[in-house]
Amino acid sequence: MSIVDKSKPDVLRVTEYVLEKGKRKEQFSVCEAAKTSELNGIDEYRISEILRDICLQPNGPNSLDLHTTIDNTNMHNLPAHWQLNSNSYFNYLSYLALLRTEEGTALANESLKQSRKSNYISSVALVIAVLAFVADTIKEFFK
Image (tube, rainbow, N blue to C red; front, side):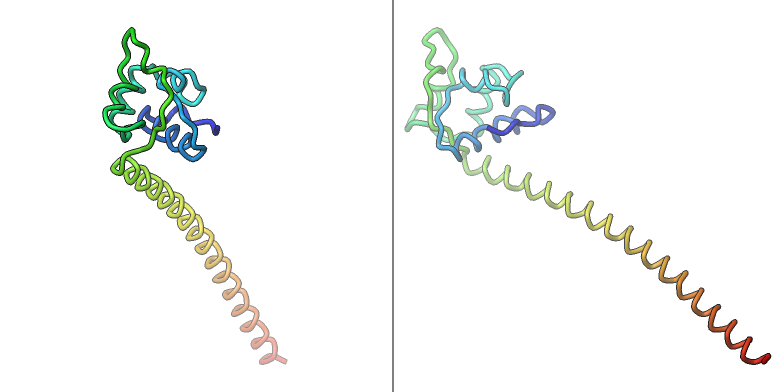
């Protein structure tokens, strides 16, 4: 499991955790998730709340409440097949697209800086070439 950036908001960390576990087709419980290094610092209640908001029914109808209710029955200890609902999944994809856009913009800005520097150097080289041509012409004229 990859390490999740702990500076990210809780909902993003849980979303990435659900996606990572889904890729591996691994079940997990709320209790188990709260003990992982990826979600360290997010308690069971908060994880349950987030899972209720972002996930489909993990094991069929009415299983969401069963797996996210924290009480003395300890049903939140039961592993389940968690999967993001369509809104959460497409919102996450939009988030990734925005990150890629920001990376592309930063790369384009750096390329623009390098182009400006290259244009300046080319301009200086052109001025030097013109001065050399003028000097050579003057030298030929006074021979």
